[in-house]
Length: 238
Image 1 (cartoon, rainbow, N blue to C red):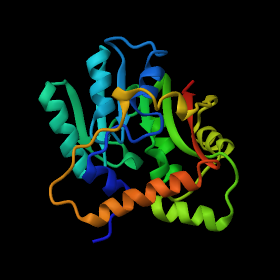
Image 2 (cartoon, rainbow, N blue to C red):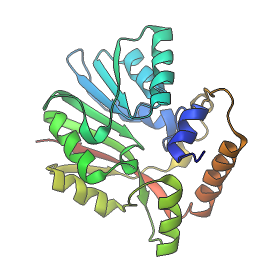
Image 3 (cartoon, rainbow, N blue to C red):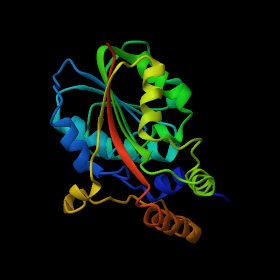
């Protein structure tokens, strides 16, 4: 059986896999105004680490979706253990199963790059209320790759394209977002927070070749550490 990178994350049950981990999520949410009337959609919730953090710290209405059934299973288990009041659905973010203008915040943590961006970002715009914010932490080309390097990354991660900062911003504007804030964050600011290291909720009977894929991911991260990074984008729907 051939495993994708998202299969790797799901079967190992890796929480906090996005750049900056839960520490970055905390820092972002500290700057937000959230009340009982705030309605949040987390897309690509994974094992539910961020989901649990949000609902346990903020008085809001929270919905979470993910396209991977194993992720949904593990996130549901986590949320049920704490009896968190979260609506969680298995769904494709390219066709979000919610009505227009329903959410005040849409959160995507290293998810959008794995989708058809031309479909996904307009969906985020559609479900956001006027005045609402799209918050993304996304893989970004920091320095140019040659075609072979880009091909290697695209094939390994199963992404359709690798965007630089300007190309991300163009995608947001094309979907209708006009007010875009791009934040440069050094991941080194967060790696020393011991409690925020990635956690694991491993499935049973994991094939050894899955760990080989994890090693390949770590090798690529090291190989391209000067060229591949991430950005935080905050886009407001006016």
